[in-house]
Amino acid sequence: MQIQLNHLMPIPLQDKLRQRSSDIWNQDVTFKPGSFVKIKAPSGTGKTTLIHYLYHIRYDYTGKVQVNGQPWQAYSKNEIALIRQQELSIVFQDLRLFEQLSARENISLKRVMQPKAFYPPEKIDEMAARLNVTHILEQSGRTLSYGERQRIAIIRALVQPFQWLLMDEPFSHLDEENTQRAAALIADECKARNAGFILTDLDNDQHFNYDVHYHL
Amino acid sequence: MRPFFDLLKKIIQTGVGKTRFLMAAVGLGIAMLLILIAIQAHTNFSQLLYSSKNQNETADFLVINKTITNAMMGQSAKSIFTPEEIDNIKKQPFVQAFGLVTSSQYKVVIQAPGDLHFATDMFFEAVPDSFLDVKNDDWKWTAGDRTIPIILPNDFLNLYNFGFSLSQDLPQISQETVKALPLQVSISNNVVSDQYMGHIVGFSDRISSFLVPASFMSWANGKYGMATATGTSRVIIKTPDPSNPALVKFLDDNGYTTNQDKLKFSKTRMIVQTIVSVVGFFGLILLFFALLVFSMFIQLVIASCKKEIQLLVILGTAPKQLQRYLLKQFVPLYIIIGILSLLLVAGLQYWAASELATHQMLVSSWPGIPVFVGILLVLWLVYIVNLATVRKYVNNI
Image (tube, chains in turn brown, red):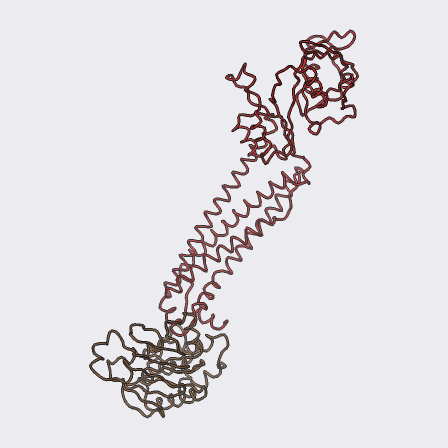
């Protein structure tokens, strides 16, 4: 799956962004399939906005976000849903778990959303074990700490098929050890699928062997 | 889909306003029941009217004439059917066969033979043979025959036997005797007068007139007829169903009249039809309101879970999946209601059939095909309205 940006510019940040240079905004960018992409961005430069544009849940921009050669707007709601089930996964900065579901159910939701599950249910336990969250799997989403929620959100993103994984500060609530574990799991899962990811963060880091670095 | 829908069940609460939903479901059930009963009552009624199992053959013969009003008195031309009026009657859908009643254009005097001292001025009329209820081999006349077969109205003999003869101290006469009487018939116009033999061949309940064969009538009208041919003032029709309200209306609209007794069933039928229509109408109104409440309930469910549904869509749930899930929450209930009301109607029909059977009125003990078609139509309508509602509100999220 190919993701291309053509002169993408967020309308609310337009004036501010024109005064500084950026590798992404108002540029032509093509993300090579399977590559590990790091986008470093200081606060307030539209990091989350970019992720939302890429995932097509915000639309207040000029320019184009093209997916497989077509702008997002060309796809129907059902087609977009299919892409989100099969080709594009995401870890939101604000995590977005269902509080009325248990941790395991939150993960399962993305496992069983498509008619044919990508992984068997045991895979959830395996991943939970790698991220040290096995003991909270049956707890309600409401009672989880931020760190626990973040790891559940990561696992949720990994139990579905994808070619690109979008991550918005995915380790912001994790300590160094858990960050390493999560990064290793993400790298393994991407390799297994020959998938790439786009990760945004505030600072430089050594969690992955990035193929490309961009400054927002 | 199964495990996914199980998770959706925990996310999308369909429990809000459950009582309202159940009441709407009861309303839908009553609506379906009323509609089905109306359809079935209609089916039963037509079965009673037209089915060959119910022996009372309803096809009937009606002699139609214009109503004589005070304004028309003395102007016999006004009671005559014009050719346009005759054509108009002929082309009515309820007219199966049509015949003119031809009247004689000459004077007739009938005399009883021998000592009976009975003589009377008379008239003849003729109708096509197919309209007669008297079947007799003697009912024929060919040119040159001196004997004329005659059919009398049954009422005429009754009037004589039970009215006239008793008061005049005359003997009562049986049908056989009348048939055996040789009558002298003198036919005349102002110029010639001829003698014939009259022979009563039968008595008609259908046509109140003195009938002779059509062949004799046309021959005699030609021979003795006065110059001015009078038109037709009575016609006879055969109709499959004298209770047909359209027939009654046609007669009323045109100022025609006939034997009212034969039309009386029409009133009953109209009353039944009105009641059935009113029941069906209330069923439809109730169905409409049930649909309205269902739509509002769906709207309420979707609105109360708006945030959850938005997140589901963001995570990649297809609107199609949500629609299917939501419909799956409601549609089985509709089908159950449909089956229940169908069973109830089947029970009612079975009971009604056995009740009617004791009065020799045979109707099928099973609901008719229209009922099944009706239930499918109603369920289809409910489904379509639900689908449209779900689609509208899911896509608006």
